[in-house]
Image 1 (spheres, rainbow, N blue to C red):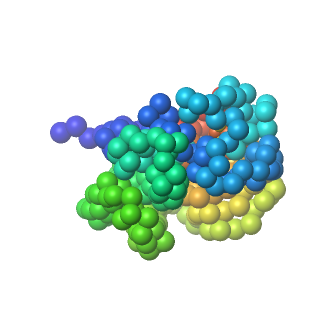
Image 2 (cartoon, rainbow, N blue to C red; image 1 turned 120 degrees about the vertical axis):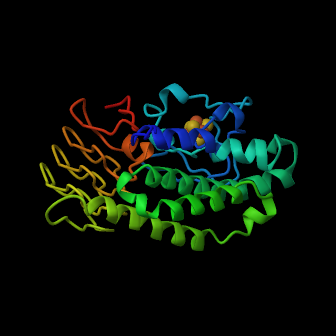
Length: 279
Ligand code: SF4
């Protein structure tokens, strides 16, 4: 029997579920539906439902190659996990929001909800690929199937979903998976769940198997830190220094989180992640 390795299994599931952004089949929804505020991440204010002035008529970004230089680094760390093309091509059957104010309103309402559903699917595919989480594989698979079915409902149904409740239930499973994985790491593990570690000096810190769920690690110095098998779900890594850090086997670390951080060629990553071009 072929046993998938950690990098292969989520990739296969994610391909099957369409969890990779396909901008060519999306009507630029992230650039219209979502709001942003002028800050270090965005050069301008933009309300939800208003197209970004950089969005072209072909739904491509006019400054895509220079987003960081033009003051839009926040756009480089966003990932819809395939929600954009799902809403554009499946929920709304390829209807362009520019042709109908009603379609536009519904689309912009559904897109953020679909993104949350796809994000949950993304995390569950990762949990399913963790050998230590095999005792709860059936529960995970059932939750994944239920969530995937929700993504195919009509716009009105998706708009009325209790996403908070769904996130709560899935998160309990993800936490269980995380505990099973981290229990295999010998010794005591740090618990920094939700901790304010903004700007913290954590050079060379032993954070192997640590719980960093939702931790605020903005601009933290994690140079040469040992983050192997650390749970980083929802951790805010904006401008965190990861030079030489070992993130091999870290749990629930996404590419957008990594893109928001700073690192170098010595940073060690799992094979499912790509070294950001700006490192
Ligand atoms: S700057 Fe480009 S990527 Fe960012 S919201 Fe505007 S059009 Fe989209």
